[in-house]
Amino acid sequence: MDKEILEKIKILRNETGAPIGLCKEALEATKGNLEEAKKYIVRKGESLLEKKGEKETKIGIIEGYIHFNGRVGALVEMRAETDFVARSEEFKKLAHEIALQVATMNPLYLSKETIPEEIIEAKKKEFREELKDKPLEIQEKIIQGKLEKWYEEVCLLEQRYFKDESLKIKDLIHKSANQFGEKIELKRFVRLSIND
Image (cartoon, rainbow, N blue to C red; front, side, top):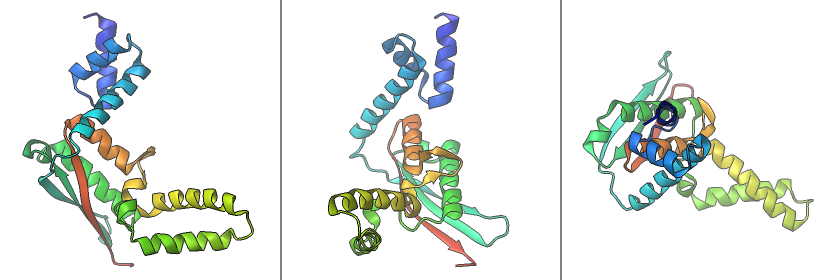
């Protein structure tokens, strides 16, 4: 293997966390194009996770974060398929980062699917009231956009990762699942604050 290929494998491995074999496969499939190889790895990871979609995540950890002043804290329950992954330092770090996100960003719900329907309907009604002077067909598009923005504020999985705004928390979990090579899930969280 020549030096240039080895260097590209190293870059891909560092940027994606994918196994060396997959990095080599991606570079071969894309004739050495790094950007295309990254996309190849993402597609391969998505297809792997789709296959694992039905697998159960029975093993897990509870990880916490308490702010230095002791006034804000959070706990998260992270699950994996195997004890090997659930006990790894990388998995613990991921869970800690998500607990830190919860403490910092104060989400109200885990995902869009966990928001009670009456809350969503009340939000839509609020947006409709704001837009009552606009034509109906425009209202619906704007309401959908406002809902998506609201989801990013109140749903943990939809929130932007505060350390890297290009990633949502669900993307961070997805990226980690690709690295671990198995399904991982954030099951639930709780945030406590002296000021709330």
